[in-house]
Image (cartoon, rainbow, N blue to C red; front, top):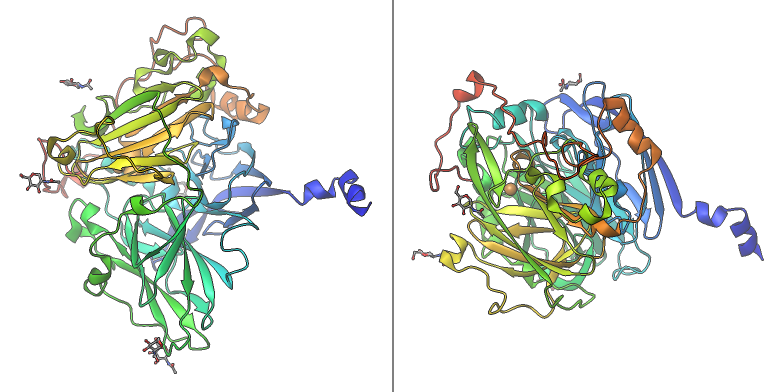
Length: 565
Ligand SMILES: *[C@@H]1O[C@H](CO)[C@@H](O)[C@H](O)[C@H]1NC(C)=O
Ligand SMILES: *[C@@H]1O[C@H](CO)[C@@H](O)[C@H](O)[C@H]1NC(C)=O
Ligand SMILES: *[C@@H]1O[C@H](CO)[C@@H](O)[C@H](O)[C@H]1NC(C)=O
Ligand SMILES: *[C@@H]1O[C@H](CO)[C@@H](O)[C@H](O)[C@H]1NC(C)=O
Ligand SMILES: *[C@@H]1O[C@H](CO)[C@@H](O)[C@H](O)[C@H]1NC(C)=O
Ligand SMILES: [Cu+2]
């Protein structure tokens, strides 16, 4: 009786939805001691950690009050199942939100776990617009077993702002594409975070790499971590000494506090400086520290050095050995296999990334809007999306296998929007395992593959992933290193565009109109003849900051005449 009364008053529903109003503005912050403008929310930085419960509807109304930059928000890891209008990448599923503009994101979070949100517009998020998004679950495998839950963010940090860093990076003065090197690395956007624990109790830690570029080795002194979640996917409990976490990835682990500790313990995130073009040019402390604090003793433990950490790091453990708790079996048979061959090339004097010889360029109409407005018989024709969006159509219900071949010597964390995917094969690296290509006919495939939404592809190696195309929409596939996104390391999965069953909300179209951006037509904005791509974006922008960067030209390991990466 009481229940039906609540229902009729709409209270039951109220409990399951939350509205957040965000004023996005510049604020000042000094997370590593250096004061600089950063992008905050409602006057605060770091931006708030969003918390939701699985099944809840979230509404976030974004008011862009930056004054001088456009923005957009991506909900990293949320799949927006069969509702792809809220995913966030500007130029892909929406127009950028102009200064003064308002934009409503509204979606139901249907999967529990550790996610994050970040700006997805012109390389903006490393200026501070990123934070965790935690989807709680009363039925989580650790429910009732943990004393408390903690969230730990890791990131690189820069004193210069992204627009300047990006201009210098994509400049003819930097033809080998040396990435900007961070000034420091942070835990929880600051220094000396402490995590109080009580003897004998178990805690859940959620660790997120919300950075722009490097990976980290994460270790807690003299404590074992039991991994229970990766990228929102519950895993079989897996004990590890250290894990390696690339940009965009998340790991949750259980840690049981000692019963007889007489001191506090160092928590370390060691940045992988080998990813930097010249490791010695990183001038910060390569280890970000926090402390595991026992009882009332508030004295910080002695922070460990990279040399101290080395024994715990080697040999590097392989995340592919961690299985999803669901036991989900290898998807198959494969209906469509796509090769993603990526490399570097100097185009118009700029260091660009290419996928199958094409560098990604945003098109004149957001790709989702092209899909929604194209005639039915052309929706799955890649041509209409523009050759430089690297469009890959996949059919509804198909098991798709992506073979990602890395023709650069560096490792890259690849992210797919709209799905958690299975990783079915990964080579050790070296120029495609010394000439051995992935062969689906002979490769030994795991019966239960690991599942996540960002996966490492080793330098000169391959990683093979599978997913079921059950989420019609436009899903980006890209390296999560923000510099590489700027250099064009992105493809666009045109997922069952012939089965799209949603409409664009009015305020989404409004922000386009305000800026004169077309909301219908092919990649070139032609809505009369979708097969005429005249005017589509095919030219690499030539930005050249010139002299400043030229002075700091770096000598780097070269491969086949290209840069390192
Ligand atoms: C926008 O304004 C902020 C705050 O004054 C400033 O720090 C930032 O550099 C500006 N951005 C651009 C692209 O001019
Ligand atoms: C705490 O107990 C463990 C396990 O019994 C033992 O190995 C360790 O030496 C003890 N440590 C201290 C500081 O007493
Ligand atoms: C408190 O913790 C510090 C750091 O681990 C340790 O050096 C010190 O011995 C501890 N003090 C006490 C009274 O347990
Ligand atoms: C890429 O271009 C090169 C020549 O520039 C050509 O040899 C190669 O076959 C092309 N590869 C693909 C996948 O189109
Ligand atoms: C590839 O071959 C080279 C030369 O034979 C060898 O030094 C290297 O270890 C090999 N790499 C892999 C990943 O097998
Ligand atoms: Cu990359």
